[in-house]
Image (cartoon, rainbow, N blue to C red):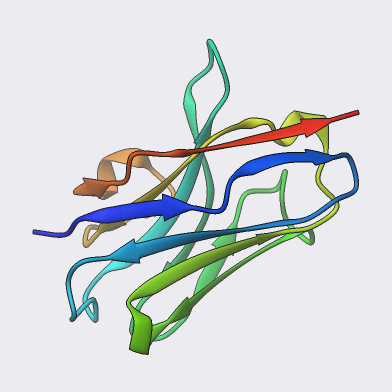
Length: 123
């Protein structure tokens, strides 16, 4: 069992930055992949980025590549999403997820999900 709690969302102007945090209840996440997804109103929940806990391998959606950075702090059981150069199109509820299956760019690779945190980017 893994409980995930996101925080750090808010309202920012275009071009601004936010850092989202995802705190995991489980001490050992060595076999997990941690991902970020986002969902805008009326749209599907889309992949943003993932990081493997043990090796730190990262992967990003094309829409955020070069602007967002995913990282993890092993001592704090926490995953971060640093979002820079934010655009109105980034407005969505952002969800943290934890899973151990293949193809971690897909939603069904993940077993656990946080409650989500709202990110709103104004123009």
